[in-house]
Length: 496
Image (cartoon, rainbow, N blue to C red; front, side, top):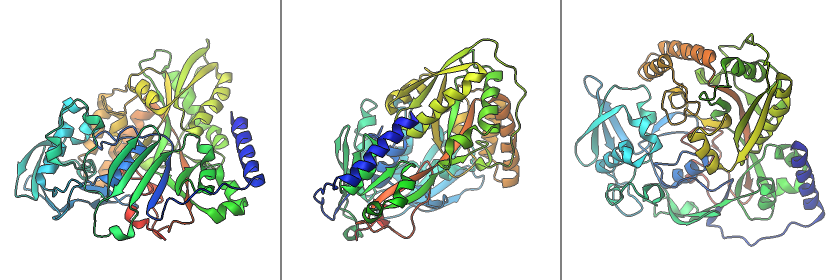
């Protein structure tokens, strides 16, 4: 597989050296064309969980709080907030003169309607678990809303990074078809055209700084990511994520450097291997064999070769503080045959599965790769139709791992159930003392190591090509979390 990819790149690079680059007409200085790897799963922000969906809704909708480029929580739509007496109530005061793209001014009713919609199980929003700490609301004046709490979690601000919708529009939408509704937001842009499966078009709202921003943003699907550099050279795109293997070629090719700039960034998260604990063959002994190979051996170093960095634990901010020691395991007496599910759009993860397949043969473990497009992959993994799967998890900047380890949580693909882990994760969300909180997560690390429902693998280095006709801001995000994207602050990306 790796040889096939290398051959494709050699052919592509040779072609761009021998033949002249085709010149495509400029779309105009007011259009920004962004390449994306696949069509977004949702443009309704209450269902936007994948990275590409997030990159789009971040331009269209705003939230009460948001993560800045350094991973710190900042006020978004919120002007101020205050806790009351027993810390069971927070009053949030909104900024004034903020308008939705349909012309309505943002007020407290919009916030309450949005949070109630997420909490309504009929609408099946994946964000419902984020708002379990909310027990109710008390209305104040037009711009103030009191949120009643079951208990005040440490991460309450993080849970209020969900996008806010217009109450008037929400009142007209029932559960059926709501997921696919195109709604108004208070962001800089509005969605004007969805052409599935190839393109989504955004148009600039009439804002105070509109004169310095792109009037139109076009998100275009790049079906073959290996050809993304050619699309930048041909003036078909302005910005596009590039495969890591482009890095070395970029440094050697003058014509590339004259046409686009290569920027590096990281995602705060990791790729991991998850076991379906409902499958009887994936015993603790088998899971320990995988752990010894992937965490304690040199497998990941040989595979990555500078494309990323390994992670040791999903707890304690993915650091190496807890160390790693190999388990004593028993050899398998009979061959074990398992399927490994993987998102076909991720070239690195596909390579990982194929690399792993060869390395496991001496252990009498035989894997059958199953590469599916994103929507089919997500459907199978959610329905537990897999033995093992390679997936990715983007984090908010913090310790909270409840989404993937707590019983019944949205991303708990392993079907992992451990009452002790549940209690520790819940206590961690309520513990404000950082020293005590770290002690709780050291204990969750111990439970994870005993059970191994999943194994963290690596965090990749990511690259974006930016056309030299684009003025790159001096303050570019180099760390992207679950609620952000590389172009999160679109106002900084101005025309030359």
